[in-house]
Amino acid sequence: MSEKPAQELADVREELAKTDKELVSLLANRMRLIREVARVKAAKDLPSFDREREGAHLDDLLSGAREAGVAEDLVRDVFARLFAASRLEQRRFLQARAEHFSIGIIGGTQGMGAFLARVFGDAGFPVETTGLGQGAPAIEVAARHDLVIVAVPIDVTVAVIHEIAPHVRKGACLMDITSIKKAPLEAMLAAAPEGVDVVATHPMFGPHGVDFDRQKVVLCSGRGEVAFARVKKLYESFGAETIEATAGEHDAQMALIQVLVHEKTMVLGSVLERLKADLGRSLQFASPIYRTELAMIGRMFSQRAELYADILTFNPEAPRLSHVFEQEAAYFARSVAMSDRESVVKRFRQVADYMVDFAAWAKKQSDAILDDLVRHG
Image (cartoon, rainbow, N blue to C red):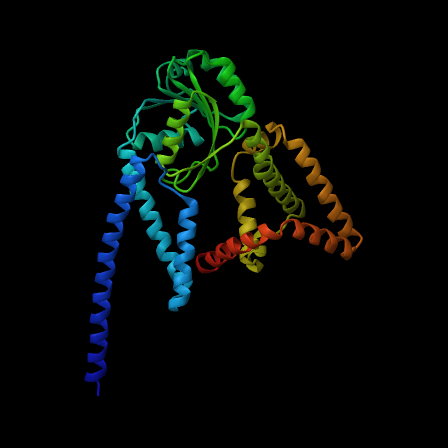
């Protein structure tokens, strides 16, 4: 009686092994097609990452999974790895064929400057860094490179620009990477000589990861279309999704995205400190979304106070948004203090009406995040 089940199992395993080999063959063909995609993108100066295309393709795949009775989580996980491998293959192809030029990074010994130096250097770009007593004087570094990047803290960015910009050579490009854009861009345009191109940029991520895969970078045009296109192509060849904006629009958006969110997170951390909350015990009770919130609070307070102080106090739009934040917090504080349930419901519904279209997208996005946290967190 034991021989038949054993033979049936052997037959199924043989068919499974054959299917797995077919999958490997399909994967090889998929990578061949990806290299062809990379070739076409390189010829047409297209970025390696297309968020809209990738999202739409994944939606189609998940729809097919539901029809086929395959778990969506499995398809999502498998194609997340495949998409990542595809993007990496495309980035390697684009970088191998990219125009190489020399890069000098003022403030390139720590933080984002050091990250950029590593990424560009690993890809074969000649990179020179200076900062914190290391390297040649900043004005010398600025004078001898094709692309000069100012990567110093926000509070000294404008002063450093005025110091080094006059020494940037004609035909080169001066660029900054700070999280505010209006003041640095004005300083670069004023201090850099005619013939020096200017681009203001803001990488919307921290100094971690292999490169800029799936990260966003804001570009603000200053002077010189050729240099702007070169900087845009440089970021995109390392996987970034670039967004073009004026300096004023950038600062207004950062007031929403950075100032408002960081102030909220800082307030939450301050409340926890005043309460002397037992965070370890709290985590034992925590739902995935609360664990994520606590993680983001802890992440902020593991970093430099000066970084967040500069983000909150240097953005020209910050005072107005902070005042509105204070008003809304006071509204809910009064409602809670008075046990005024109806006021909470009324304001909640007003916000829900405002967000009705956005909320559908947000629910879908947050469900995917929470599902991933439950499975892997």
